[in-house]
Figure 1 (cartoon, one colour):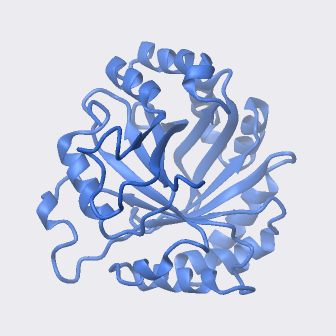
Figure 2 (figure 1 turned 135 degrees about the horizontal axis):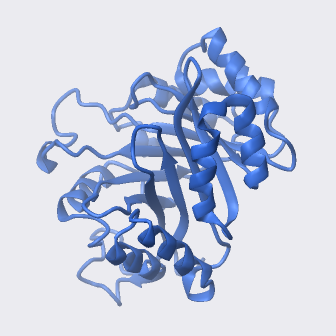
Amino acid sequence: MAPLFSPRAVGCLQVVARNLPGGVLAALEARLATGEDAVDLSIRLQRSSNLSALALVPMPEAVHALLVQWAQPGGALARVPSVWLEIDLPTSVAVPDLLSTPGTLLVPSVCARLRADADPLWLADTLLPALTGERPAPDLRALLLRCLAAVSPPARPVYLFSLLPRAGSPVRLEIFGLGLDGIASCLRQVAPASMDRVLAAAELLTGAERLHLSFDLGAEVLPRIGVEGSFPRLPNREPRWAELFDRLVDRGLCAAEKRDAALAWPGYDSFWTTPERWPTGVGSGGFCARALSHIKLVSRPDRELEAKAYLLLERLSSKA
């Protein structure tokens, strides 16, 4: 995985992954700047996933309660197609100590995929309390509804997060389908002070498709705002991926060797092509598919713009 991830980061991944269900789509979040080797891990859960394996993982009660409620057919959360758990891997804990201390909790961010017809009041009064494990403060509820009202069709909310491990446990709203004009219009209504710097970041994604805008909600819209973009086809069939990475390298946001590694990530492995890396205990069948998902730029008023690549991997049956 070098140069995207250090050996220590890979060790953290391996320790955490042993506690999570297999056979799910996973995403690795790689920082692209020189010297940044931290990695975060996300897994997508569907109702066909092995949710019972997660019952044994020491996580906050609110997370377990949400998963139990979501798994109930016809329940209040039946409208949620899938749930992602995102684990921010620590940078200061020794790998052997990770999750080995009694009472240590794995505290993930929880992300609910939203249907295109998601009702704003259902999001505010049903999904939001389930994600956070408590009734939201009136100001937060009102802010969420105001942000949802600022989204003009055909754009729509696509994810709602509870960022449990972050300071203050904010809520994140992610919106799909906004062009640059739509991003400007939305931010002008809910975060005008951030509009100019976020638009400057978004210009680095010129030509990218499937633009997303995400912002965090606390007492107000927080200044940390993300924009992301991608292309439907993988780099070997889409030259604009390389053009996008080149712009990030030229701006000093991405190391050239990380650009090359991210562009080379898509492909697949099997027991027969990489027996030395194939996990024990899963047999020799199937293959692990890898894909480049998207680039995300994170804008903060007091820090340099941060660039990240999201890399997908999933073990598939040879019968799929």
